[in-house]
Image 1 (cartoon, helix red, strand yellow):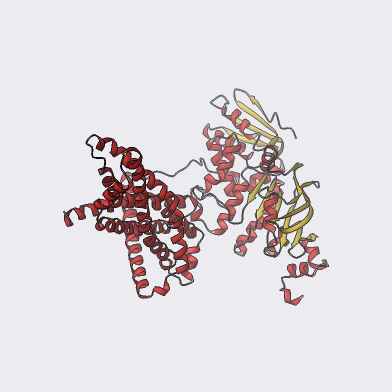
Image 2: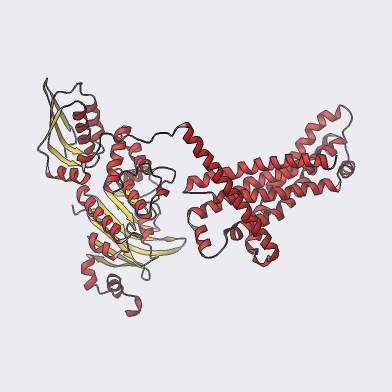
Length: 252
Length: 374
């Protein structure tokens, strides 16, 4: 499982004439946990939105599972969407539906299972993220961490081959955050799914990341790529070492 | 990967042998579950399941195991699992399949009539309390503004005056003009029979200035701005912006509600006047083109009919409607709990409640006027 499932070539992105990143080239390999890093506001979440086809690149290409990402080509786009799951920063659960309904929505739409089996499956999904028994709760009745886990359960609904998680552990207590890391590792192992994660949490990075890339706002490019443990000690770039050693910029 | 066939069935009089093969996932599982559901009943006393050929199983594939377990229990059959591969065992352990209870059907029961009646009553009394609190807070806020006018957020107030008033000019003008036109047209048909053409001017002027001008304007403002107020405050509520205001020491009534109420109070009466003007223009057009009236005669009749009291009364009503619409819009926004759906409900409710209150208050005022100036 070493062939790339996502290839990004010459990606330039930005909004309204202002570029955020220029000429990004990287591959994400099948079955790995790939982490996108960078300072606040450098465009990590924007990159994620490009990878899932919500934003159109200014130039360059994104290929997922051998298919070129192009929101204009509806058929290919839908085939790509069938193999990805996304967890958004705030969870993005539908507030008018219960948790169970949120998770059941894609399953009912894209599978031939009957109601009873869907209820069982929803229960298994929520069990995986530790939310069994909350099927009938509305999102507003949950804490922030629970919403995140529920959002992961919904992203997992169709067992996609690639999961995109935007800041999964932000705003969680250390225990919940560690549990979430364990969950990601376990899902990665049992489902063999590829994970693309945007996160700031250092402990989380060292626990889960197979490979990371670090984006830099000033040079608008990738300044580091590889194993975070190696980068922490050996990166020639001062910002990278600072980031991994959690030091403010003044000490550089 | 051998995707199919994934299930072979060996049915005998005293035993049922099943063998699963290939991948058990979202694509293959529905078909397997279907075949299991079609097995002839009752099931024999012994079921054995050979899992040796399963190459991959995810949580959806686990539904097959759950279903088999359940079927065996329902029919008092003894089930034995054979050759479970290590990876399947791992998934089963991870999902804690052994502890999935009998049924996962919803156990939520609808509360009885009495319970629902009670809940509704509690809700209504709770709401009534909120209404009173809001009206009180708003009154106190507005009175404190009289004493300290500097505390009014002037920039916001002017912005809302533009949104409620200036931006509504085209639609209010168009609708009023057409309304005057239609009224003149319809009444002309009747009045012509009696040679009372000139009274078309009186009818249009009086009906518009006293009743329809203020009401039409209020309904347009409720639809345009009342809904916008509810949606704006509701969304702020959802994204905790209202909480942020409170913890920063701002009073949300002063910050959010007062500018909207005052802006509406100032511009809606003007809008109503403007509406009257366009309605009379509409009537004039019909009078001149189809009733052989001169513009001079039409306007003279209009001015003879209207008293200054009629105009003032219309303006007075408009001001009351304006405060009602703005306050109701803001109040409904405050009531938002949860998310997007709740904002939608609040918006709808703001418009419906505003219209109801406009008509109700208008009726009450009509009755009062009847006894005050017979």
